[in-house]
Image 1 (tube, one colour):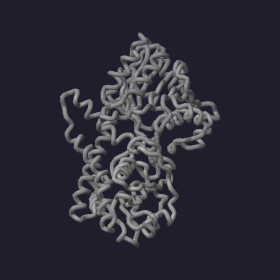
Image 2: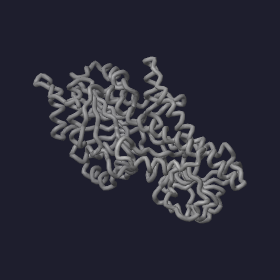
Image 3: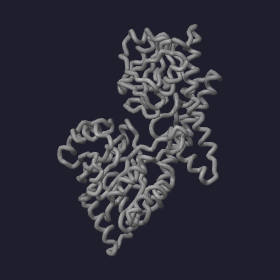
Length: 451
């Protein structure tokens, strides 16, 4: 394990002054992007006494922060209220205030283009904004997930156009976010943080910053190593999910319950980590990060065939779910065309209010294209606006007995804890369960088909 050495000397006046401000919690911190990553980070920094300015182009989001109106599930309402009330956290759309900050942390989206190439336009735009107002004595860190080389190849040249030099006048590092929305055990504070600096001094200062609010900080040799660490973490998950999804499709043909197999295998106390099948992968990381790696690999004339195959399987499984529903309807002498399909759950995982890259959006669109009349119920997602896989505006319907009975088929795509699945099985004509949500349901098993 790499360790951080004290390389700042008395001659490094700018670096020494910044590190001292950080250690005394006198540094002012700017957080660019107040979404699922940025707002929790801003709150954590302000909770230990740092003065934090949140920057966002979304004026509605900025107004909500300033009014202590919480919109992120992983942030406690009282924490936000306290930090705003004490004047330790404020938000703005005025990026000229970046000049006030001693530390600037970039937490902006990194989506894919329509051709599955990395879209780092938000990172580049943020870097250009910083470059307009950069001054000596600032630490810039990037937390957005991206391909190895982004910090050095994209951000550094933009910042050095100012005439300032990294490691001398300003300091640059990469430290990937590891947010897991809805996780009750691991938060920003107690999730280990990887950090890599452009120079040893950059690393020392960035390490000092993150140590103020995070239990365990793990230094690595470079920003590229930290960038690849994050991409590897999510590629690992994507590949293993693909493996169990492929096994699921085989089990379907063999007449074997994949859930029974996975849970039995998980009882082995060594050599296996349990991954579960599902209707596809969602969230901002797993469906996207592997494509960042495969894209970058092509620059080195290297093709990540294993990873690309996993991506294909995780896309294919959404089509498999549609086919599973078609077969269930056929068993009742019904066609998918003109069928009333009620989707239960559209968030990308249980008990959260996030539909980013949710496979439910794609599956619902596939059903609509085949002529089905699709409605949905999700206690966390009241409205779906056209984006991602959805091309229409939809509103969540109440989960009444009448709604369940009226549907030709109920398709469970997210296993929210608040839903009474025994009642669903009792009232529905048929149920296709992609999450094993009906595992504990004893009655009406003949109505239920599981993937």
